[in-house]
Image 1: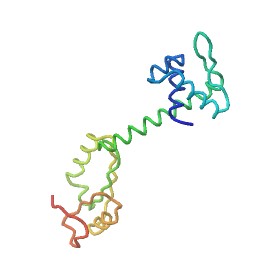
Image 2 (image 1 turned 135 degrees about the horizontal axis):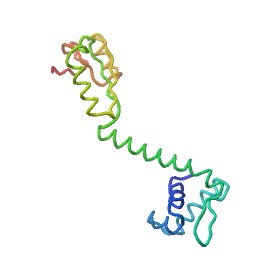
Image 3 (image 1 turned 90 degrees about the horizontal axis):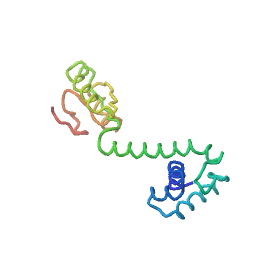
Image 4 (image 1 turned 30 degrees about the horizontal axis):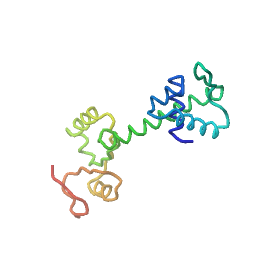
Length: 160
C-alpha cells in the first residue's frame, strides 16, 4: 500500500469524483484510477461505486476511510515534528546541574525558556560536579552546569 494511493482515495472521497480528485492532485484521471485500482487489489475489495452522477463509497471503502485518514494525519504530524525539530522548536534538551544551582535564579530562567518554547522538553537531572561532567562525557545529557570548570579537561567548559 502506497501513500499516493491513500491520498488519491481521500481526494476522491472529498471531491466526490475521480476527475475532480485528479484536478486537485494535479494528475490525470487515468493516473488516479490506476492508484485506486492498485489499492483495491491490495485490499481485495472495491472501494467505490462508480455511477454517472459521481462516486460513492462501498461498505469496504467506508470501513477503510477512517484508517486512511489516520495514516495521512500521522504522516503530516510526523513531517511537522521533523520540521519543528530542525527549526529548534521541539525536541528534548537534557541538562545535568549541581543540585544547589536549582535553588538559584536559574530555575526562573528555565521556566521562562519553557514558556517561550512549549514544544521543547527540558529533562533535568541533579548531580555532584564530578557526576555532571561524567554525564556530559558519556552523552547522557547535552549540557552540564557546575560551579567550576571541569579540571580533567575531558569536557569543554565555559565560565558563565
